[in-house]
Each structure stands twice: as structure tokens, then as C-alpha cells.
Image 1 (spheres, rainbow, N blue to C red):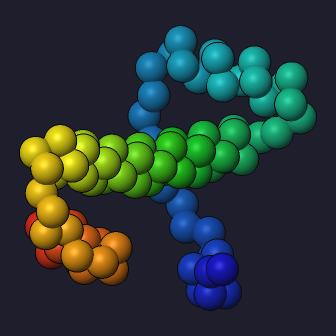
Image 2 (image 1 turned 45 degrees about the vertical axis):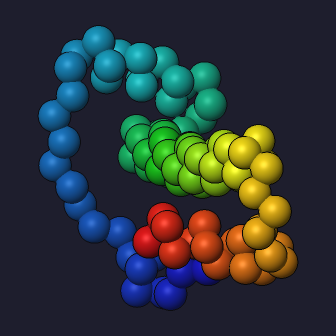
Length: 92
């Protein structure tokens, strides 16, 4: 959740290509939104997708590393907590 002061709106100047503004305007009519709402929602969706991608990439890298360890027959894996700590230390 965000603090009240973080929810305050601030004006931002933005220049976009005409074709993009035309597409935005078409969506604003279709979804009964104004430009600001549409652009805000689009940016929020983009940021969320990037966060998910970053998490996925990190998890994917950890899984590949674990597969490599298991493939090489490393019997010194220890506990799951030790493995997770090891992986966290390597990504920090």
C-alpha cells in the first residue's frame, strides 16, 4: 500500500508521436477513460511486467544453477536453507 503523500498527483510534461496519441484517443473512447488514466494504467502495467520479468529471470537463473549442481553429482548440497542462502549470496 502507498502512503497518502505518494498518491498525490504531479503534472508531467510528455511528448508523444501523433500516431500514438491517435491510438491513445481511440482507447480512451472505447474504455471511457481520459488520456491521463490510460497512460497511468499503461505505465503501471509496464512496470509490473518488468518486475515480474526480473523475478522470473532471477528464479530461472537459480534453477539452472541448481540443475548444474545436481547434474554434476554434488553430494554436498546441505539443507535447502543453506542452498537458498548460497544462491542469495551469489546474486547479491
